[in-house]
Image 1 (cartoon, helix red, strand yellow):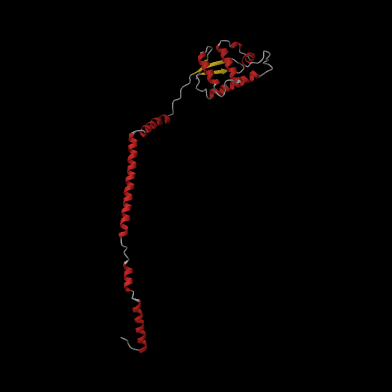
Image 2 (cartoon, helix red, strand yellow):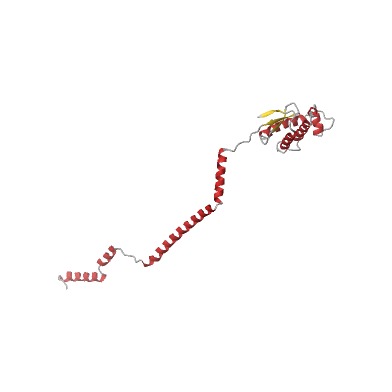
Length: 217
């Protein structure tokens, strides 16, 4: 909401509003629009707004010579147009929360001041809900209970590794004493296989029998 333009604004509030405007990047101090704005605001606060014209702005604010002719030189008109646009951008951006709005109506160089009732935005529900959780987490991480939990977890892992290593070592110690057992069928085959000398004698005996047609004892 904006209140009607105040004919007698509080000079302190308006001066602070002017300072914030000229500190912005849209109307920086030292620029032609900032110089014009400062001049017309100060003249209005001093109660001399009737003397604000293109000629006085050019001569008193911008330092133009006394021979300045506003009908032939459009410097003030162009600068005032840029100032109005810059003010609109300022109050739509960085000055959206300013309690006072300074206006300059088209066709006039006299400023007007509007007191604005700007509400302070409440934090979003998600943000407000997450802040307590973050504080709780930070308190827990810095508390002794957190470090006790971490230490217990480390000890549990260390114990499990120790038990596993001992089991592996015990299996390795007993391995050399274990005698490999040969399969039973291999032992049977080895027992049933005759010796090579026995086979030779049996072959000679058979040949002799065939030659003499009789058994050889």
